[in-house]
Image 1 (cartoon, rainbow, N blue to C red):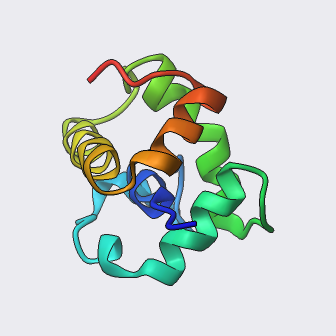
Image 2 (cartoon, rainbow, N blue to C red; image 1 turned 120 degrees about the vertical axis):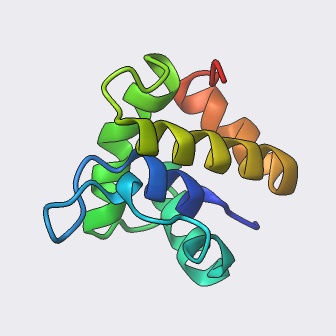
Image 3 (tube, rainbow, N blue to C red; image 1 turned 135 degrees about the horizontal axis):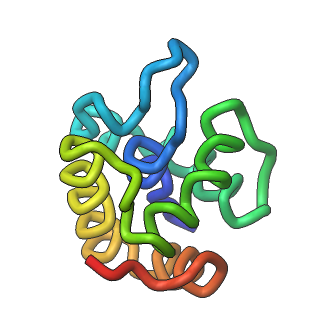
Amino acid sequence: MRCACVLLVLVVCVWGTSGQRVGEGDVSRLLTNRDYVNRQINCVLDKGSCDNIGRQLKQAIPEVLGRQCKSCSARQLDNARKVVNYIRSNYPGPWSQIEAKYGRAAF
């Protein structure tokens, strides 16, 4: 299964390994790493093991999808929109599974 959760990882993770919000950085370069995307989506959908980022992602997805990223900075919200739109367009199957599990995105 082609998985695109790296997109969400970059946007919705509460904290990265450096203590900086992952969503604050540029998400574009991470979106091109299919292996990383696959690992993260498998984690989020409980189909694979989770690394630190995956665990943070699972905690942050409800904020992004359920609360429309109300606690996010402007940069994080922009990244969240980019990621959600990218996943919807390029990985509709995994995106449907994510929405079924965590709720629909309002943006």
